[in-house]
Image (cartoon, rainbow, N blue to C red):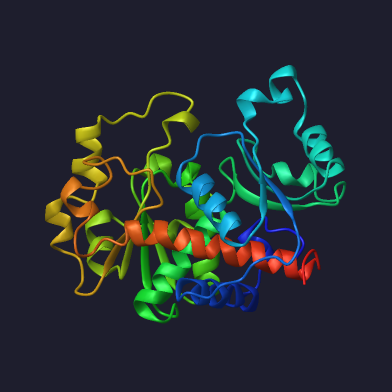
Amino acid sequence: MKHFLSISDMNTTEIMELLQEADTFSRGEQWKTTEPVFVANLFYEPSTRTKCSFEIAERRLGLELLPFEIGNSSVLKGETLYDTIKTLQSIGVKLAVIRHKQDHYYEQLINHVDLSIVNGGDGSGQHPSQCLLDLLTIKQEFGYFNGLNVLIVGDIVHSRVARSNYEALRKLGANVKFSGPRDWFDPTFLQTDYIEINQGIKEADVVMLLRIQHERHEQSAQFSKADYHIQYGLTLEREQQMKQGSIIMHPGPVNRDVEIASELVEGKRSRIFKQMENGVFARMAILKTILQNEKVVC
């Protein structure tokens, strides 16, 4: 594995191997590079969880993190993503983690650069490292995927998290359904994948909530915060209808009392902060696998 770009590129064996590696890190395994390896994180969109957990993962693996801030770079002078990556490659960077607003931005890079690319999120395309940490959280909870009922609720059409999780979970045998505003349902999914929220809540083993991505809507979303919460949010009343043993997930950032009642964010069903913790382990697994496969380190 030279690059980590999309769940679409991975088979079930590759996914499970990464999950196994991530799980060993979660149980305290230590591993560090045997020589200096420079890595750069290029985030063209704002990020807290993904950016910070990659940085922690990189430091735990002993990587040399090259500080890079878009706002203080030649990007502001018009430098292209390609030229930025070629510059970093030229000065010795071996691996770049990139988040970009353009779908499939990495296609302009992978056959023209020698360093490894890790996709930290591309537009409304894919978010494979978030998917991996979500899968790790589910696996730790249930021990399996086959036959699990997963409900993903919210701004589906703009969600790279929904797309990555749908692909991976279906590959692993889970039953995935979507809910939320009909106008925000992605038409590339089968219409049978949509379910009315109150019914979906009752059937789900995992309820995964999504943020409304106002920045990707061409015009303001047609719901007030209160209206969205009543119609499509995980209210206290809906939580009472969830199955025994079912869990709540959210990739963050969480808008309390919009997609989820504030009292439920840290409630007994919530695995939201567990997901954040697992983000470090999942990203350590991704980075270690690339470094070893590319023989950058022993």
